[in-house]
Image (cartoon, rainbow, N blue to C red; front, side, top):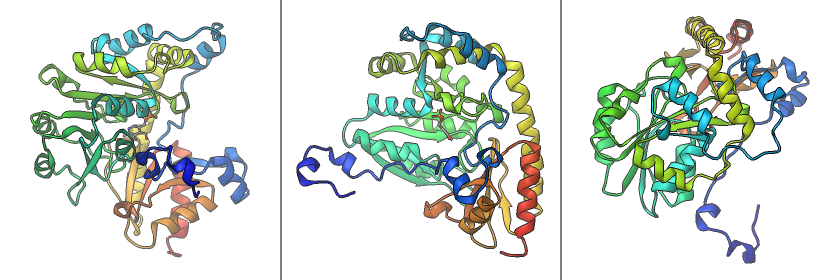
Length: 367
Ligand SMILES: Cc1ncc(COP(=O)(O)O)c(C=O)c1O
């Protein structure tokens, strides 16, 4: 939208220059467009947990009767639960309004105008889209042809202005994990290494033990994926002691709602149920991968997350996306030129895999 000159003057250039986040079309709008009831739409586009969260969370939220009070700004009980779950001391944990908020807080606490942030691409878009807002400059370092980190290129890109290096483990959308040696090499650069472990519960691998040796490692986790709580917006960071104290200064006092804090306590009291859903998703990931591999127009990549990236080897990714959408199946497509001919498919329930595979097999002759 064209902005009047008088108003333009009042807005920061970093904001004027920002492309802005283009949200995924709401599922209600898609349903209306394709003429299907919303609850028949199969959501394989947002890496959500198709089993939902546990009943215990729903019961706790429904029976809690102190919503008139502000939440605990110290997040004390929820942080203690996370400490018990992760083995990290609670004073090094900060809970955010989704791990997205923690990315903002890290940038807010570290970036002076012109400081640099290294982003190995392709990866989760938020690191790159938020950095300029805080005056930071993004240095994109492409991954190798098979999406491995190019550690030599990353270390060469480090300058005295480099503050943060984001490493997603496993990476979204490519599904692969960095190795411990790679992370150690990055830690030795002295920049703050942010290991985004949003999909940790699906990979079972963490770099947290390295925090005993290095004081420049940040681990990010979320309850959005494994715990089925994307709608509650709950993530956490495990930080070096001194950095936790600085982030604590910039965090809004009541950044996480009482409902969110209670949900964390309930989830971590009911870990067995959620672990079962994680196991089911991991089994289904194998079945989906094997099914996708049999198609002669998609090349799936092995994944340690709850999603599988596919290269479209025949036909056009956006066309396949459209055809699936017409059948009520949503997958993730990309406008980023690096990923223009790829699709990311979230692992759903077995019946979702069946519907997806039937739709894909049905279109094999047409594309
Ligand atoms: C790698 C990665 N980090 C962070 C997030 C955001 O998580 P949250 O919902 O906790 O903000 C996502 C969500 O897609 C992600 O893929």
